[in-house]
Every structure is written in structure tokens, then in C-alpha cells.
Amino acid sequence: MSEKSTSNSLDLVVTAVATQLMAVNAATSVNVARKVLADLVAHFDVDASFLRHNDHNIRATKLVADWPLRPNVPDPDPLAVVYFDEADPVFALAEHLKEPAVFRPEPATEDYQRRIQENRHIPPTSMACVPLLSGDVTTGVLGFVKWGDRDWRAEELNALKAIASLFAQLQARVEAEDQLRYLAEHDDLTGLHNRRALLAHLDERLAPGMPGPVSALFFDLDRLKAINDYLGHTAGDWFIRVLAERLREGTDGRSLIARLGGDEFVVVPAAPMESDTAEALAYRLQSILRERVAIDGEMLTRTVSIGVALGFPGRDTTSDLLRRADQAVLTAKSSGGNKIAVFSDEMSLDIEFRNDIELHLQSVIENGALLLHYLPEVDMRTGEILAAEALVRWQHPTRGLLSPDAFIGVAESINLAGELGRWVMRSACAEFARWRAQGVGHDAVLRINVSPVQLVTDGFVESVADIIEEFGLDGGSVCLEITESVVVQDIETTRITLAGLRNVGVRVAIDDFGTGYSVLSHLKSLPVDTLKIDKSFVRELGFNAGDLAIVRAVIALAEAFDLQLVAEGVETETAALTLLRHGCHRAQGFLLSRPVPGGEMAALLAQGRIPLHFSATPHV
Ligand code: C2E
Ligand code: CA
Ligand code: CA
Image 1 (cartoon, helix red, strand yellow):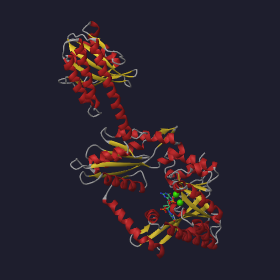
Image 2 (cartoon, protein in one colour; image 1 turned 180 degrees about the horizontal axis):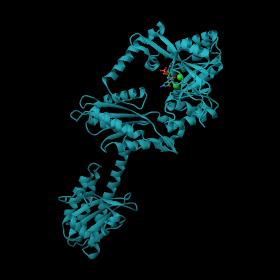
Image 3 (cartoon, rainbow, N blue to C red; image 1 turned 135 degrees about the vertical axis):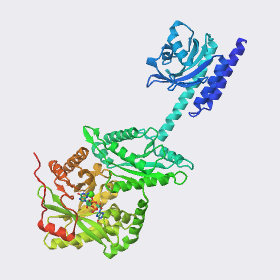
Image 4 (tube, protein in one colour; image 1 turned 90 degrees about the vertical axis):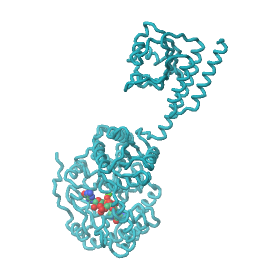
């Protein structure tokens, strides 16, 4: 062959490789690489060739493709990943190789020869190694092996350099594609899959003919919000990462774990799973997640509610499955949190119940089936009754006495919250005025819950003013309780409404403090008198150090802003004493009193105090 025609044929080889590699993507790259290697083996008349990529993070070279296929490759393949530190000089060279290197049989490459001989069962060889380069970084190597001796001409090595550069470009492109796909399917904070990836996965798993049932575990961290609000977002993020890591460790590597944003996670086990097994898995993961996490020297535990649901391929859709899991987790949360609930048909009955309530609620307000109970608020140092909170109940003809959680949400969803709220306000003020007329409760405050919907209704302030006036109460003895979330959702409207209420003279408390979207940043500028720290932080006080950290932060906050602080949900003596020790003495809760009917509340007010069954002197 003339020199001219050789270089022509080398050009053709390079062009052919370029064409083959052009259309490659991540999924096809290995097969196409193998095919290209096979062509090069034939063209250069060598016996074997390989493509390896460098992983500089772990300082190793990884086999991508080789040709010919080796028979009886051991598992694990000793050639798959070779660490540079442990590698013989020829492999080690691939870490930073910048120019082609040619090896011919000689003593210096003995180790390498032996390794190849052991693994390939072939005699001493000669070899050309050509680096894949990306800028100054050696990203991999192409190798061409000839049994026995072979010389490499400069033009040949130049052609191999051109081919290596094509492979390097492909490698960069595939990596970029991988990276983009990764970003599109994963959550930044935790590296878990995201919602999009979850939906795609479930669509696939629920396709007709796939094995089922497919189970989904929906996780909702109870009160994670509070960590963000009181210990800062860095702490919150760290906490979420720790939990993500625990979920990873607690599941087999094949389960899909997704974070849907915020504090919601979904686990989809890879294997078909009946509900017993899925529930058992949920219990196991719950106990792993409940273990303490150290943040800034505080040991935090956060409880988690889990909803479990099954989907049947070919019958249920992804949204069916997620809706059931979501319904189950809501059930778990509404029964106090830190629970596991498996979706059942009864949960569909809940929906019936809702419909029934929806149907009757309108007439209930008119027909006098609503009544009020009152929850005393007490100074835990003395037992003195400081306030009475009106809590609405519904005497349902067949379902018994319903608690507000069962029907307030429904009322809001069918625009009855305003009417219900007005009924509560009038009835509570009327009853309170009667007690005062009987000479009791002159130093006590009447607390009334206001639904978020009411607060943003036109004419709300006027209706409050009218009712206060109608019953001759002074505004200072009535306090409206609003929840944190509503305040922030529409901060401007809220600001105007609260200013209006301030003019009327009524007081305002923020209820369930710590559970909603934080009003912290607005506290200073809002006309608010009282914070009621949510019962979920109080209930386990004395046992849960994380709760104590949050309670202490809220106590400090109330002091800083000169606000009254009331602890809700005091159920144990330990909680009461812990609160007292940290300077919070206003409280309500089952330890002090259950909600009582109006007559009993009047009697308590007449006594002026509730006998305390624990020692109010803090331990020294
Ligand atoms: P809330 O405002 O946080 O009221 C306190 C609730 O906690 C009451 O439940 C009370 O019975 C309960 N509770 C008091 N002490 C303890 C305790 O030591 N442990 C536990 N586990 N619970 C305790 P209830 O009466 O079922 O009311 C639930 C919620 O319904 C109230 O929470 C309030 O948000 C809402 N609500 C009640 N009455 C009205 C109303 O007239 N209007 C509106 N919009 N909402 C109301
Ligand atoms: Ca309340
Ligand atoms: Ca509350």
C-alpha cells in the first residue's frame, strides 16, 4: 500500500468512527463503542481493544467496552474497576496519560503482562494506549493489544488520537445528558427522585400486564415546619437530608424513593407487595425515622405519619394510587399524627360522612343542634381561671356529639363558615354576658375561634363590633383566636382586619402557634396580644428534647415581643412543670380541665380557680 493510500484509509476509518458515534446516546453508547472497537480491531489487525473511563473521584479506571467479548468473565470482573493505586504501571499510566504510549514486550511491563495473561489466558503482548482528553484532564483511555510484537506508525497513532478525541466528545455528551436527566428526575436537596420521576415510575408499574399489587407508602413528617421556623432553614434542610438518608438505608436499593417537596416522601417498593407486608415495612421505616437527629447540639425527634395504599396494574391509575395513599396519610395525621394508616374502603365512607354533613349543616345552624363547650385557661401557679375558650359542638341526630374537626372543614368548603362563625360569636358572647350578669367571670377573658375564611370576609370587623355592643361587653374581655396560616396567606388583608379589630377593642391571639406558615417575620408589626403554642409541642414535653427547644424558643419570642403566651394541650404533670420551669404559666389542657358545658363553666368561674393536683413550685 502506498503511503498516500494508507493515510487515505486511515482518514476513512476516522470518518467512519465519527459517523457511528454521532447518533449515540447514553442508552446505546456501550453497544456502539463495542461495534467501533470491533471495526478497529479488524482494521489495525490487532487481537483486542478496550475503552476505559477514568473516575478521578475514586481514582480508578473503569471498563466501558472491549472487543472481542471475553469468554467466561469472572464475577466480579477483575478488569471492570482498577484502582490506580493498586494498578500495575500500565493501568496506572492511564490516570494522567496525555500522549499515546506504546508498549512492547520487555521486562518493564512484566506485571502488566502477567495480569493480562492470568485474566485473558494469552501470551505476552504489545499495546498502544491513547488517552481520552477533556481539556487537561485525562478522562479515559483507548487500548489496542496485539499478541506478540507490533510496531505503531506515527500516522496510525495520529488516527487513534483523532478517534480517542471522538470518544472523549461522546463521553462528555453522554455525561451531560446523564446530568440533565438526573436533574430533571431528582430532588436537589436530598438527591432522591422527584415528583415527575415518581409519576413516570408508577405509570410504568401500573401498566396492564405488570406484576402487582404495587404498593406506595406516603410519608408526612409531623410538624417539620417548626424546625425550619425555630431552628432555621439550615437545620430544617439538614434534618430532611438525614431522613432521606435513613429512608435510603431502610429500603432495599431497588425501591423508588421520591421527595415531593416540603416534608412529603413516597416510597414505592420494587417488588409486588400485599398490604400486610407494606404495612410492616411502614412500621419498620417509621421506627428508623423516629430515631433522634442531633442538630446544633439539640437532639430532635420528629414523628412521622404514613399512609399505605395499593394499586393494581391495568385497573388503577397513578392518580388513583396516590390519592388513596394521600387519603390514608390524612387519616393517619388526623388521628393525632405519628400513626400508620392503610387505605381502606372505610376511608371512602369518610367521604360519605362528609356528604351527609354537608347535606345537614345548613339546617343545623338554623335548628339549634349546635352547642358550645368551654375550655378553661388556668394560671398553673395558682389555679386561677384566666379565660374560657368557646368550642363548638354539633349534636347530630344519629352520629352523636360531633367535634368541630368533623364539620368545620366541611362548613368552610361549602361557604357556611361565615354563618357558623356568626352563630358561635353571638352565642358565646350572649352566654358570657349572662355569666357576667350573674356576677361571675369579670376578670376572665372569653376566647373565640375564628375560621380563616371568616377573617377575610367583608364586613367581619363590623359584625364583631355589633355583637360586642349588642351584649354590652367591653372589647378587652373578648379575644379572637386566629390560626397562623391564614395570617401569612394574605398578610395585607389580615393587617387591615386586625387593625380594625384593634379599633373595636377586641384582643387577638395566634392559635396553634408553631404549626402553620411562620408569622415570625410579621409578629412585630401585627397587632396581636397572645400566642397559643400548639399542643403538639406541649404534649410530650419532658420526654421530647426537640419539643422543649421549640417551646423555649417560643417563650423567648413572646418575651421579646411582649406577648402573652398560653400553652395548649397540657396533659401531664411533667409538661406542666416543664412549662413552669421555663417561665410559661398560662395553660389549658386535659390535666387542668376537659372542655365543659356552659353551666359547668359558669360554676368554675364562680369558684374562680381550679384545684391543682401537682406541686406548682418548680423543683430546684
Ligand atoms: P383549638 O382552637 O386548638 O382548640 C383546642 C382543642 O384542643 C379542643 O378540641 C380541645 O378539646 C382540645 N384540647 C384541649 N386540651 C387538650 C389536651 O390536653 N389534649 C388534647 N389532645 N386536646 C386538648 P376541639 O374542641 O375538638 O376543637 C378542635 C379545633 O376545632 C379547635 O382547636 C379549633 O381550631 C376548632 N374550633 C373549635 N370551635 C370552633 C369554632 O367555634 N369556630 C371555629 N372556626 N373553629 C373552632
Ligand atoms: Ca383555639
Ligand atoms: Ca389551638
